[in-house]
Structures are given as structure tokens and as C-alpha cells.
Image: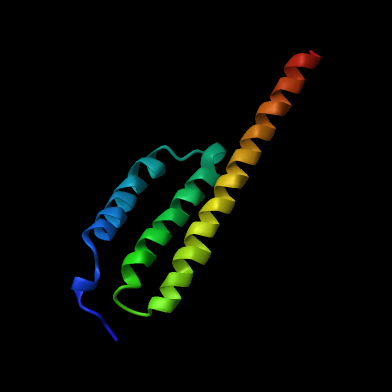
Length: 99
């Protein structure tokens, strides 16, 4: 059922610590324009937390949460962020070229 804390590796603990501390600058520098980057980072935090929790309880559920929600969600959010950012740049270049 509930495994001991010895199931956590030091690297995984360091990963979740860095991810959680990294939320501070992401929150402080949040802008409407960068919301998809913030969502992507939040999904990476979900993946990091799920990695640690899966060693303690419900390993299959948290493994799916890590990969299905966290990592895939981050990939989709970063793709959306890059697409929207590129579209904004190309739209502004059209305007500047037209007049």
C-alpha cells in the first residue's frame, strides 16, 4: 500500500524541488501573452510531483498522470505557445510590410 520514503530517489526529490521553486518566477513573470508557456510549465510540475507520488501510492495511476497528463500536456501546451507566438509575429510582419 503506502511505501516508505526510501522509495523516493534523491534525483526525483531534487527534480520536484526545483520544479516547485521554479513556479515562483513563472508566476511573477506571468503575462496574458505567455499563458501557454505557464500552462506547459505547470504540466511539467504535475509530471514531477506524479513521479514522486507514484513511488509511494497508486503507482499505475500516477504513472499515467505523469506521462498522460504531465508530459503530454506540457508538449501540447508548448506547441500551442509556439504556434500562437509565431502567428502573432507573422501577423505583425504582414502589417508592417503592408503599410
